[in-house]
Length: 103
Image 1 (cartoon, rainbow, N blue to C red):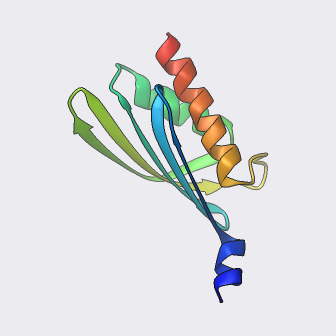
Image 2: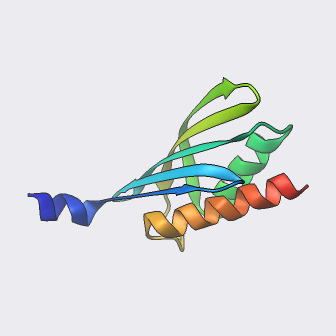
């Protein structure tokens, strides 16, 4: 049973100066948590970038922790998405937030 669960569930956590990122992948669904400094327009840019990667936002929760913010996304991986592992998704999200924070 445990081997089966490891095949369908993968998780990765990445803590950097840009953001703390946690990704849990269960088949075609992703639970993504991003803790970062709050910036104007950040959420809209992040959603746009995720959708550009063919990750559809199903549910979003935002928790403000002044001066930080925690975004909790439930995402669906669409068929055309080129990302297939939790690590690849975490890397892409890191790049998204690095770009957003460099503006």
